[in-house]
Length: 606
Image (cartoon, rainbow, N blue to C red; front, side, top):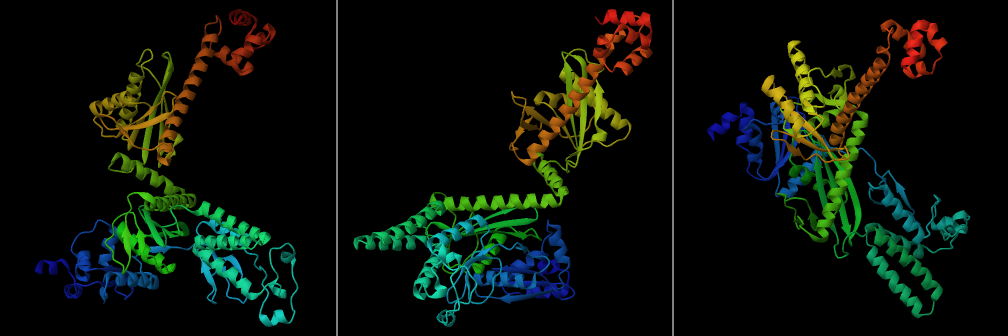
């Protein structure tokens, strides 16, 4: 105990921590101004709070939080579930600086059943506490619109904003509108539809919005059979049409067996700064509610802690009474009368996969939105991914890539392109004429260029790259390694970009001996590496074509007697190309370089 006390330098905080009860509860950290900066829950208050002071935390934010704690308050509760609920309420009330922040600023629409004598059913983004009932919010708007369309086709309800009180209807204050004439409304405004009949439809609509489509479907089937037995076939046909609409909707929305009823499903995905949590509520095998939201993390909370917070938040928001919660991993969490399930197979596993699919898509969408607003964020993420995939000790801010180009060894050239923060730095691109290699030897050409490049950088004390990419497989990597490590004694990571038989980038190689790195094709990271490879190939090919074109021009004119550099320049300046010189008349050429030289040119270019 004495060592524990020494771990907490501040005498005042030490006295609080050492006297904390070892029971469930909530703790609050306050700064020197008395502001609550963090709220947390614990099964064992003393053990949990002491852990903040007893060790050096990896997270910088956690270390900063600890240095700013000036006072500690706590609330003892009976159970861990009470602690969860209280923590959730206090975070929302005080919004402490170092707690996760619920990023729920987007207003998702809900379906409202209004609190009126003849209720209306409509979509809204505003929740008014006037006794109306709200279903949602719906994060997937097309699903909500499909639900409203189903209700509209099943039940002709009023859409007007008239005050349809019994007194106003009895006084004959209203006239029917177009909706009545096209049979989208039965005219309750003029007493053409009774209140009882209307409210029966509203009761059925409420059940549909709750997800209880099975019970409505069964009731319609019974009514249809009864009408048919009474030989009321026209009425039975109308009921049948409603039944088929319900069944059609069920076939599209049902994802599992209808025996799975009243279950909550949660899944979570995280990145460096945020957690994304998806919530599904299942009624009669159908997804009745679906919502994904984001927590902004501050002190590197674990997935378990974040998911616990999300479960409490969503169940409170949706007033869920489900006795079973499906989760992706075991949680050290207890809730009265609730079972936590981590499914391994079957329908429940299918539901968990559906939730994971939604949360991953939401994460991708949020990432794309953020990167549109801040392009630098995408570059930082890609560099971090490269660093993680290759196990580098620093971010690959500066990347260089090499490629060779020749035709059977003639006009052999090479190129180096430079990318900084995942963007091409074209002013730093370099072209190389191969000087020491005879014939088509890509390995020797690569070694010459890499040797020349980095020998010069070392002599000029320039900046070395963080990563070298080679446009080739294991062979190219090895010859580059020989120059970089064996000759120049440099420590620069070397990555190979191998191509398939269709000359497309197929795999990424790293290490010696080289191993395939599992970077999926089609991902942003793979596209970046592919882009660098395509860019160096384009740059090398362009340089090679230019050189070959010049050499062809030079060979055609330089071998002609009496044509020196001046006359060659005059001819090309006048006629632009050898092809045009060949087509020109003797007189036109003579006008530029004289008759004797013109005769030699015409003879040579026949």
